Length: 270
View 1: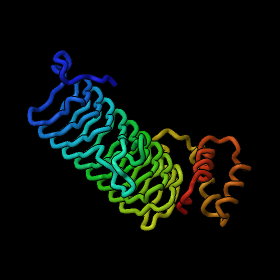
View 2: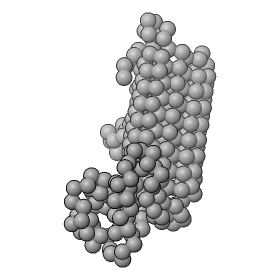
View 3: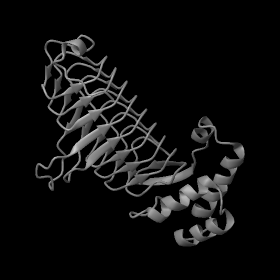
View 4: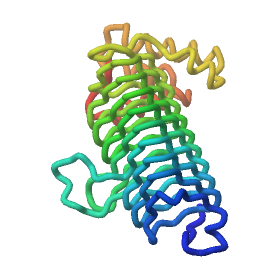
């Protein structure tokens, strides 16, 4: 990402800024950036090459946005955390490349000095979704309309959250999992799981998502067996983990599940 002085005439010609927008002189805009009417870009904001900012967007200080992102109308990025502990410390929001952030999405910067809320690459956040302070989202994630994350939520790559899903603070959501609309998520969700409900329950393996991501049928069948051991044999979590370690010592996807469970602090959704 190039840091570009918007007052440099040779660079400014390559940037399209609507005259009604307000851009702080300390903001850095990459080549090919477009900013629509009535948008506001605060100081110490960095926007990467070819990112498009639609009308009425507000981007607060300490926000970095990567290349080739599309920020839709009414989005608000990098505003202070909605956290009583926050006392004005310098914190950040870091957004990667190729993200689509649709209408009226809100993403807060972090709490605690020097910390950042992080959104990786190639994510799609639909209208009215919310990402709270200190969340860490990986790559290829979909949050459908009005899905909302509490603070310190971690979402791994290629997970999908349905519309109106609510996620409790400090929850971890595993890679390639899918959570049905209107679900209430209060405990961690295993990688590759298909979950739904209020409160949430695991229903099966996310087989469709795995096939779309080129998992072999052999691996899918193996993961089905793993889910049976964890959820349908009557074993408690510790017993199930021991059996997985004995029975599948070398399979990468199963190692991901074991590590995920061992790191869980809130416990896993059953």
